[in-house]
Length: 269
Ligand code: SAH
Image 1 (cartoon, helix red, strand yellow):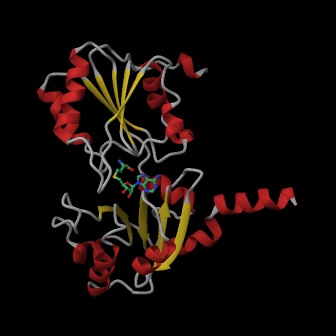
Image 2 (image 1 turned 180 degrees about the vertical axis):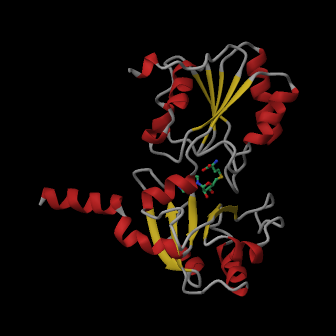
């Protein structure tokens, strides 16, 4: 059956779709996300949406940037929500496109609530979050039988930019063998110190995956003790996720992307 024959929900004028665009590789878009891109009148996208994905928007659609990026001036969240309401009331099909998944550190909840309160019909389309897509493209299983029965997605940054108050690092250190920390580049040192103080092994393997699933993806392998210093020395650029846990070691066999690149290079020799 062709893509066009699938029975997609109608994207009605005057409604808003909050859609996850995945971590970067356009191949990781969902079919619903592609359907939304092909039908939207206005695409309000955030800074993490890859330019190659925006190129899939319907010719003639208006593209509006409404990004939030740590440390840089960005539109206030209520302004973005108001913009969505205003565009929908003007009768547009509004696509709010976010990196990864809209409900994973994506403020999709806030925007959805604003739409609900304004009685604007909306739909949530999940996307592949950086923690899932990034691990897969680095060859690190998110769960692994026997060693890795629980995984936690955690933010390394509170709303002020410092360590988030709401995260209990000591409890987390015992609660999940695999910790995937978003927005952690600036707070990696205190996070590692807290985890080690709570009993995690200082030699535990850590992978820092930058620009995951894009052509510029890099993976730095280090240990909990040295992660912050190594990240600084290597000049890791955001966006990046930090994966902490024994399953990071499996990358030595599962790094299919590195293996594919090496084989391609070999073939050209
Ligand atoms: N909604 C997004 C997360 C937004 S918060 C999602 O589900 O993925 C922003 C953080 O996400 C970044 O600081 C980084 O930690 C992570 N992130 C987003 N895209 C990424 C990518 N391509 N590679 C690595 N980390 C990424």
